[in-house]
Amino acid sequence: MADTSDSVQAHLDGVQPPKRRRDAQRLLELMTRITGEPPRLWASVVGFGQYHYTYESGREGDAAAAGFAPRKAATTIYLLDGVKRYARQLQHLGPHSTGVGCLYVKDLDLVDLSVLEEIIGESYRTLTRAATYPSRAREGGEPAPAEVTDTQP
Image (tube, rainbow, N blue to C red; front, side):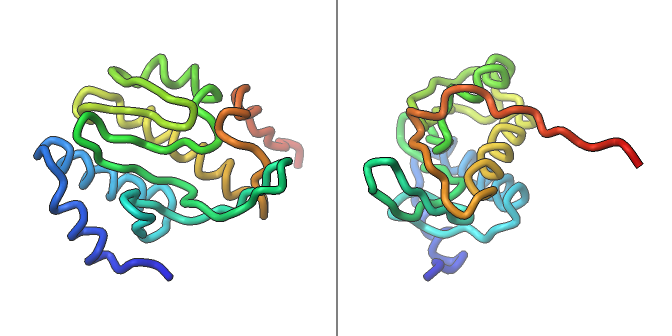
């Protein structure tokens, strides 16, 4: 089911312009480290891990739990739990634009990679935490609540 790393690398080797190819290589390493999952091609998206979704409408399916697509104009980073929930972190990211479930970055050298790592990691954990994720990106509004750790012995 999963593509080999050779097919992912072949896909990335053909990315133009060179800045997008450079950023794609960096995201490949970053997302592999964050998710602990091998990369897999989902059409033209380089995805990591998988989650199952079921919407109120009854539509359901599987998608990459983290992923990116190097496009000519910008690199698209998918946040399928909704971009709005990361509004606080995005204020500190650096130059970017957003869609409902997409973060667009033109140059990774200009963004704070630790902030990007935090966003991708949180999104990945949100999507994979439950057996089935029930919302679409446009429904993912409020930031996820901070995790509470019991400090009592």
